[in-house]
Image (cartoon, rainbow, N blue to C red; front, side):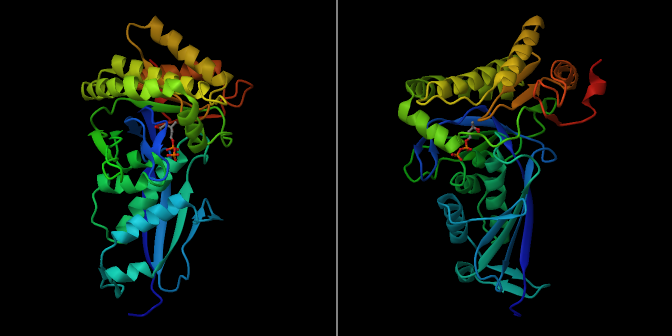
Length: 358
Ligand code: DP6
């Protein structure tokens, strides 16, 4: 075998948005959460990460580039993912390129990783979720690891908790697990992407700046200081998880919207209950909530659910295309893009949505 070969794999992974939130770890190193969570995975054409991983005997160290800029791989989270995947690497044989990599060779071979996000990094749009999921998935393919997506999700979890849910499309549950080594803290699909495909997700980008308090630091402070978190994790979320799975299975939008909005609001209440308090939403976020609440109350059944992660951007989930089109009309009227009202842009599943307003 000539020793100048390069083997490459490219993968694309969408981000996911939690409708029942993960907030708080019981083990910081293994990233084990204090409660189950449920998310919806976005369309791969919207917010996603594309990662190319390469291996070659000519590489003398592991290196990574994010959006074209080299970043350090020395952090514990990257190292955990690389170690776990290398431990599962299998023999690779590519006759066409005359490449044969034995299982034991993977310990010595170095990797080059190039990753791109098509959305602002660390602006509360879950860039680490898509990033680590894509990293683990592409490395597993490169190294011919035989694990299924749930098993891979337990590795991606060690990069960033929410990443484990991006290994699947549709609706996904991250079960917190019971065992100390975290092997049962993994993602499973609740329903695939076709099950409820009339929902339309629109993200109102209120700010694409980096958030001031990272999720990791924020949730650490919350675990240490918030009594409300204990009540949420033990009493509230377990019931909501059962109800949310039921709502998804039955495509019951009224229950889905009620649970999604309540859970987002409780997550932000828990942030306020933290010492020092964490404010992720801003005035524009609050105005969007008021606008949706008012509209939902004026209709027979709710038309839109809202949820906010660790940032001011609104994720709006409309019942169907008509509701999405009417929502866009309202948002463009009350918050014209690039105006003083601070919505920079809209990321919509389908740019032709306005013609369905009726
Ligand atoms: C508010 O997964 O980014 O988006 O595990 O420390 O990397 P780490 O945190 P991260 O937290 C996400 C928090 C959230 C809610 C959610 O996605 O469930």
